[in-house]
Length: 86
Image (tube, rainbow, N blue to C red; front, top):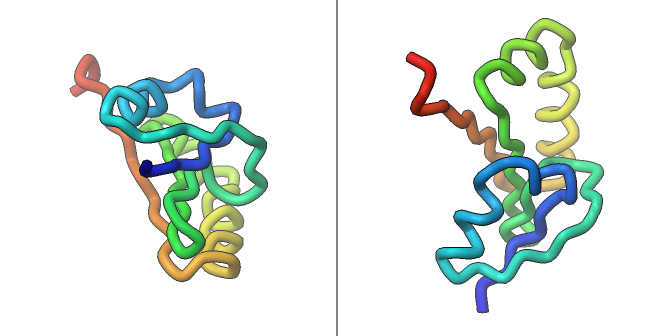
């Protein structure tokens, strides 16, 4: 089956349940780089729009991306928009 490694802190978001409903096997653990690991080459950092702005302002986003680029061939930044917010 298709496996996705999911950071334990991500289970507060909707995405893990969506992935599970689509047939993915979720492996929960604490990930030091990124939020989701899709393969040895692909790492995903998920950001809500508000978190994205906070991460820009604090400089954290730059550090996160720099680390992802160091360890993964295909780092991905997933920006999650809310249907409720314009």
